[in-house]
Length: 432
Ligand code: HAM
Image 1 (cartoon, rainbow, N blue to C red):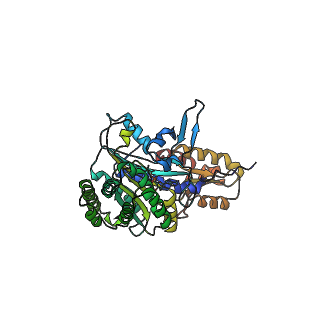
Image 2 (spheres, rainbow, N blue to C red):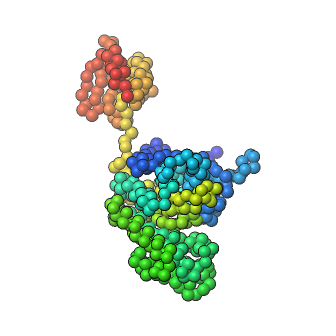
Image 3 (cartoon, rainbow, N blue to C red):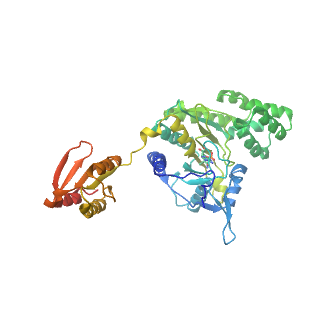
């Protein structure tokens, strides 16, 4: 019986693992150099954890199950609720601001498409316990730091930034009620993904008042913070949030990454819990789905039973990133080649045991060492050694009758005879 892999999942063969590890190791390296500490949580949580504050889109994409005790659980579609729960549990003992990162494996029952799968890896960085815009800027900087580190430039990627606080204030001046904001956000977030007339039809269904409808459409075409300034002039909160956006761009300028960033009113975010800055990272050509996204979520910890404490963070998936890197030809050059330290060849079947003994000793001393189970002539074994990128090849041959081995440096091709006992004792001193 042949069972295929489940739709929207990936098998990671060894070359795929090299690629995946390269991506995730990069995420970890950049997180650490930006001052974040690593955390992780369980792969499943109580179902309600993701139904309460993440919004309908995520709730509809949950892989849920009932365990034998009748508990309703769900595989995590994101890690932010887990982060909020974990921080709440130790809120009093954790020094603030909390700067944590994680690289969870997540599952969403989405329709699989280019850049979107049902199982993926997502880099998360979050800063909890600071309402300073510096935290928003640091999160955005950290994402750009990574993207630059792997070779992407301002010509390849853009961070589109807006503010839900600003949008909420402006929408309220237009006459949208507070309780109408969330469903409106959900629709406005889909604007770029929907055909123009479909979007306008859905908006008209949601906003009955004709003049309000027109003003919202106009608002969504705004191109600069300056334009918002004029619209926001009568509303204090709107003015304040416009100033905050300006300050955020100034900080990004100080950090040297302003060229990667632009204001974009269409950035709303699909998740319901964002309250302030919101941003999404895209390829410049806007051909792919978002590489990452995040923002400020000042109520989530409180909503999960903790104190009112502000937070900001972002998530970046591995799927779109991999497509972009492939398109730009970046991945193949950077992938570390699988390497080994030694290959132990034997010139006759009778030396196999010796080869096994040397292999074991080298491995115990910390060296990556391989040998062939099946005997073949030495030139074939040397070929195997070079296929495995072995730095050195030890040949156990007739010289062994005089207690000697041939050691060949694979890069220079130089060979030398070495006394077996000396070789073994040297292993210990050289041990890794
Ligand atoms: P999100 O926008 O849902 O945010 O996901 C962030 C990124 O994860 C996306 O831009 C995309 O790269 C990747 N991603 C999401 N869904 C899929 C999928 N089905 N297949 C492949 N990649 C996917 C969040 O998850 C927030 N929790 C991020 C956050 C952290 N906000 C604050 N802290």
